[in-house]
Length: 189
Image (tube, rainbow, N blue to C red; front, top):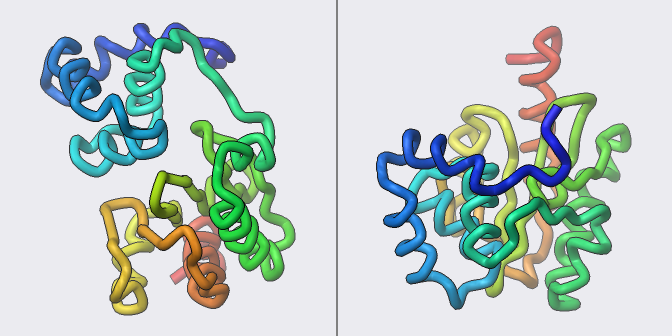
């Protein structure tokens, strides 16, 4: 079991090995983006350097002076620093999914709100300064929905939507259905 407040520096050897640069280089990257908000820094590392969420979180928070894990305990706590518009959009996203899939559990994982089915993650949302990232989990789901994502900025594992997004409930529900099909092979493709 992982300690609830791991030493962020304990991630550094794995970060150096996996991403091929010494920590001094990663600290220089962080210095270049030091004026960005936490979620923007996380997204930058994930989208531009292929960081995992855990490694990005460790580097960003260490660079911000936090040497142990800071966790949000609820959706309300996560949304507290966000704009009213962002709060409403995030709540609408989760409501649209949970209307159809009531058994999904809303949890905080990797310091962001996620929906889970049993022990498996199904969908997540990250709030950035000027937009949101929605993240259907599961291999190939973003590719599968490519035609329906025209007009959105699609990254490797996330889809960028505006902070005031008019929630496409059908798209969200269909992406979740695809992920649930992956988790339940008897109902799968």
